[in-house]
Image (cartoon, chains in turn red, orange):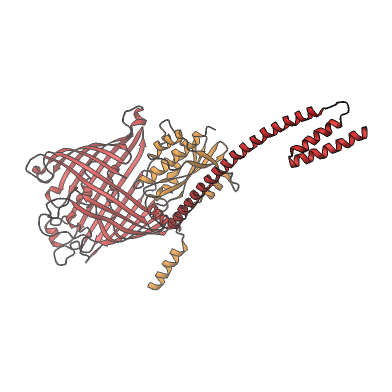
Length: 469
Length: 168
């Protein structure tokens, strides 16, 4: 009996394995019969077996239905996934095309970006309001009130390489120009030069050097090269650097700047020269000699040199000399060679809550020739001093409502120019308010006393708005 | 004679480099750490830092994070700011919340080169940041180099701000 039980058990194991493989209901039925036979202690009837088989069939049918439903769901999901995959594939194809298109055009875009990176744009501008007892140069005693967008300037620069660059300054003066010549406005090309860094690593005490050619500003004075409105006091520029040093003064030529350690620089320039008139109301007037590189006569060049020392923080001391063999560009007119001498100091030092500033400048022309000596125009000179004090409002007054800097100044000028109206002493006082370091609001009062004709005296106020970027 | 002069000039020009880099970042770091430079860390420019940095620069800060190197009690930063048209690269070492060293590493402007001189940069030594995000020490400018001076002051303030924001 025990042997039969073992044999039946082995058959059951084999059949169970077969049933798992074939999933055939009859196999399980046979299995149940064998189970019944192998259990001698438990008698099982045929009815019971049939009942169990029916129960088993129902379970199998239910299981089959469940599996079928699962299969249908999976087929549906599969179809959806196929659809999604198709959509994704289309998107990938589309993106690939787009990427390839971008890649194809990348070279062009990179060139544009590179060009943009190497090109700079800047500018400055200033709006003036003058309210004077009479117009400067007039003797009619009529009050003079004028608003003028004096200068609108754009800079354009481009770096060809790290060492070679182009720079230009394009200016519209007095807001308007008319072709019929009735307006006082001018469109001017004040700078357009190419500069090359010839020495960029120290050679002995020579720290660096560059050379330039084209139209550039003459290295003279304080304002001629740096004249953005936020950088100086007064609505109008000082008169010495207008009448004696004819700022803004630009010429065409070649120049070099040699910078030595510590803080010493030397400028040398060979440029076109002035062509001052010898007749008329502006005879021998320096400022009238600027040809602005507009079909300018170039019979005699001008030779300029400047020495500048900035080796102490806050201090600039500089001197310029210029020689021109014939300042009228014409021979046998009673005017020969001319020398310009200029020297200045510009000093700023922090004292107390703010910064003390001082500017002082002297300039003179020495012109030779019988005609110019007869007209007593052979020596023209001027000087000014300008103390100032500047504070940061927030730092000084804490919760002050206005942010920014405030500077007060006073300026005294002495002029001895060619025209009668250019011989005067002028005292000026005012303030600059910088709401931002690149924007300024200006106010000043000036009192002008002519040295030879009291009818030319005037006084009044100026208000200005300036910016740079 | 002229040919000899021209040849000399050509040799002179060819003998000098054409880079405005006075010192590389690596050389600056080696000057502080020696030959073994530690791995840099990253400072993310979070909104509070960005707001203060914008106030210092007077324009929006152009990056989202910046590298720095940690020293005993301080940090080292390599930062850039535009003077007039081109960026000036400056190395700044901050020690205990004050400038320990500042050096112009690269200057690309055509004017204002004097800011790289020691007589100018040594003014920043021991400068800290006050409550108005300004330097608590007076720095005299250089006439004719206003924009370059301004850029260096901004970089010094930025380095001090970044150092302070680490809350070490």
